[in-house]
Image 1 (cartoon, rainbow, N blue to C red):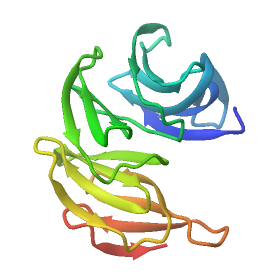
Image 2: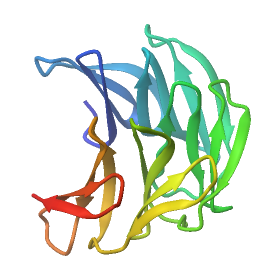
Image 3: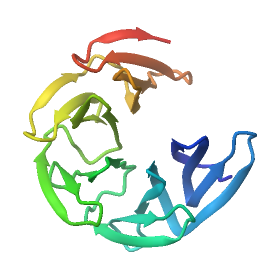
Length: 208
């Protein structure tokens, strides 16, 4: 497995790891296999209904979303035009793919075949590292971590449901089935803490 890990996605008892030059599959017994090879960095991998979506930083600049079937064969791809080379993520729903465009401070909602369906204003976006996650009970909301701010954005209106700047150096975010939001908090030490936020309000539940 690549020594660089940008993101992981779990599906059907398998873990998929995005890294340098491809995607690895990790089995329950810890075995790792390269299942998708690309010529650039894969910043994000997401597996939905057996379909694998990879967000790739292109060599010539910009990004692409590449889609693979359950046998790891490429089925389609499209370009996501953005100048920023900083780490970026996407979020995949059953009906769309969501990717931040930090140049225009918008979140772009693509169809599963790459057509732009909506551009949602998101003023908190900045030309820096960005993480996303979706909450199961809020299908039209996305959690965005960017520039020391964690926010919940309503994708149907572009409104900010809640936002917090109370975490010191928040980074990666993920959500569980109870819609708790887990945030990796770096602070100034080498130890990464996990802050748990209430998905409805953004209030800090506890940290470990």
